[in-house]
Image (tube, rainbow, N blue to C red):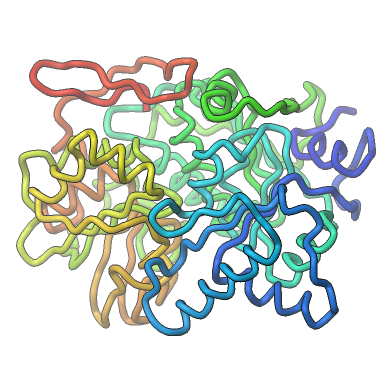
Length: 449
């Protein structure tokens, strides 16, 4: 009997040829990512134990990202503690405000994520990086302390759910719609403590940025990790950013899966997850045109350059509806700068949007868009639990950047297909994994997403 991709990754990092689901193993870690919320408590735990040195500064990446710039005294204290600790430990991979980003977007963008790695971070959306063929998962501050001290961590080998994405993406449908449809199908605990392994013909047509959106939300289905094979698209993405060596693992043809099914993405329409669960997904045509007080485009789920290009293609020449505010948050400084070079920020500003620096911000009810009682927000983030973005009496809806942009213009939940410039041609993503802008008359439109 063969092994799944996650089993292969874990076996390689615990000195074994073979592992089985349910086993408790101790795995070596290739990368530990730290931000200002969960890391200071982990550091305090180590100090109480008399542990003053991390296992290997070269395998740690640090960036403040949740409350940046600092929103109050407490967040400033956390950021200062993170900064002092990083200096004490001599950690070189540090991204300060002004050259920073949401950690799940920043780490792969800057070439720190390689196929075959094991990666942990004190944040549940660490699963994002599984799109590059890694075992990446979120942990709490106690486990983070252990990881920083030893460079190892124990795991129970998860069972694997195999999801084959098949068919061409229809006009106006994106990777966010795929994952919302999947979670609607299996529920928020449908993959509880399971590895969500993806394959299928539709995967080949998705850019790396689109793939990150899908693995990002593994945790919203209860998954331990999300993982995709490191194919030509993934390898091109990595090689464009680093020349560090890496190892590619593949699932065996006879791997044993706890469950396996196909999702026909060709049958999908733009999705909206209604309050207050990510599993409350509906086709946009089935959703009442509720008035939105706020539209939020950003986060580790949908704040990448491809997402901003899609939103800008709809907002260009239009205005945000009266009575609705729109907030755009690029996921990293580099995304912000490239969006500026391409004129996307000007498009957003002309439409009446506010553009923020990179931050987790309002996604977790932090700042830069917190909701008040009774307010509704359509967001490209990953969670719409009660009180997630502010008041427990507010309501959050989840959707793609295209649906968010259309909703910002209409002021009510809207179908992006009514606003997109023209149908996107079903052309596969190029081998380098980068979105392609193709001239189409006077404008340029995004292909292969």
